[in-house]
Image (cartoon, rainbow, N blue to C red; front, side, top):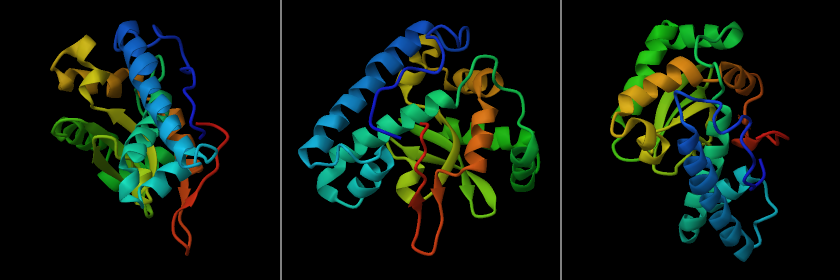
Length: 216
């Protein structure tokens, strides 16, 4: 993934009534753009602006003096990934290998949704909740603020943004309603299945290696 502010894969009003045009215009059009613009400036200062975004994040995570770059680059990556985790007429249940892995890890799809939802609601303050590949199975995890699983060598399948700016215009302080709407009506299981088939980080003896995807 390159450090760019790409257009959404759907119209700003395509996720209504579960996520409004006003929310997407503010969230994608302003918040996400600000992270990208700031990360570009900081990356250019240290001649990292030509690197893939994943590599910028992993390099900055090793340097305590590059925390500002790390925060903005990771948030740029998280948001680009999040938009593709959503789709009009989404929700429902996955099938194929992803469904089998979810059942094997959590016991059932309903149990997974319960774990994922409780994790998202339990994030104190701002952050993200993720479904990630964990060895032969899967795991649900949360990251605070702008952290991302790829900082920890984990390959994500899907995420939900639980920063207040992701839902406050539509749901005010009702995070449970927002999470339920995303899980029930917007989650893009096809994208999650693609990420399972082609992990963004492939483990090797030398440690996690960046999967150089042409797509975000």
